[in-house]
Length: 325
Ligand code: ASP
Image 1 (cartoon, rainbow, N blue to C red):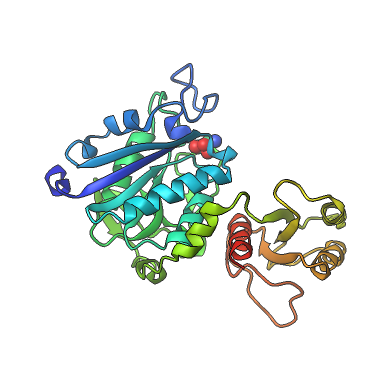
Image 2: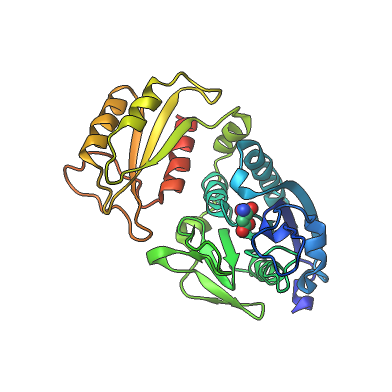
């Protein structure tokens, strides 16, 4: 396998996460500090990378629950720079599991790369008795070097997930991601890919919008889009509080994404407040709080739906749409 890798340059970008986490005891898989181990040290532990021409960069060193625009900007810029290098076959990004689906979505929406951009992660820190990071990184390398791979994917626990579908669905197990109805794109077995379906067609078109990327890089903040649930007892007070709140450093409220019940339904009392927000120029989008399925559009639905995106991805999609408006 290692010989096949020769001559195909890879870039590995580190952003932190549990994969780079350190605990004081090897049997502690939860009481660690994320983002401690340098990405160059993570790479050094992966034999598949030894024979591969490689550039390694530490773009950030954070717990991904604390993701901020400046890290996304730095990451998007580095990914774009490396994608433009003809000698680069693919990019691997080490990342925390908590917001990896948001970063994957953002990079896919901004860059639509025709080369593979493979995010990987771990549920156990690098200091664990049996860390999962080295195998995940090794699998990510196999995906990034695959001749047909393209677009942004997440590789974890031997499975390959598309950026649009992937969601973290478990708090603890080492295979915490699902791709809902779409299912995983494939799996990695002993450095070989077994695809369950073709790579998503939109991914392989490579329709990168440089202006959209530049707008993100130039932005001081993303347009302010808040996310809330509809739940038993939702009375709209949260919306009214947001509407009455003075603009923050991120500016005035521009949008609200509601994780609605079931097929994107919203409590009547919350709906009244959301309509009030709409009337005041705030964009409102409804997704579903269900872990699976999409909001199935129907005549007379009171609010626009998220076109199949999960609430966190719908929030990002709306923010990007407003940024580009
Ligand atoms: N909080 C960690 C992070 O997202 C969790 C992980 O990586 O599994 O950075």
